[in-house]
Image 1 (cartoon, rainbow, N blue to C red):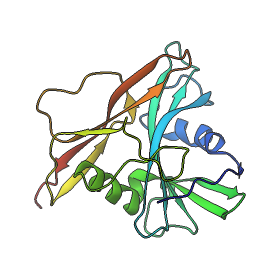
Image 2: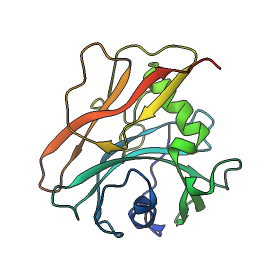
Image 3: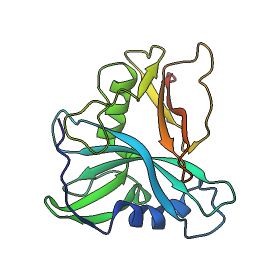
Length: 195
């Protein structure tokens, strides 16, 4: 189980995401500098204990209606080879672990492998800020294929009920700036198309 350290990160995750998010094609903000607040999320454990995995929901309050974004994060002790340059969100100095390379989890093979494991029922979501504490509010509905599983991330989150009889999908919640809560489908499993 991952240990949550009560320490500093410089720059913070939100500071890094404030610079990175507007460069993404799925960013809906009206300004180049969003006002991000941490709104929800959970963690997954890396069985090898090398990569920190956080599935974070942030809300941008600069738009007339706040927008919730899903950002899976992979925290590493060294640079990840073989990923696009834009996959690196940034580096940060962790008060306990030293320099951490923070990647968009969609490009981190350990993060995507653990999301696939979660959708297959082979991983347990963990509380975002408590060590060794499962998060029962994060749920998987449906059944995912054992082999050839791909994961589609819903980067812009819209509160909605899951469709009837959909493929396996991951549902979690977050809190809007006004204190109300919402839930949505964060990720959907799909079979990898044969080549």
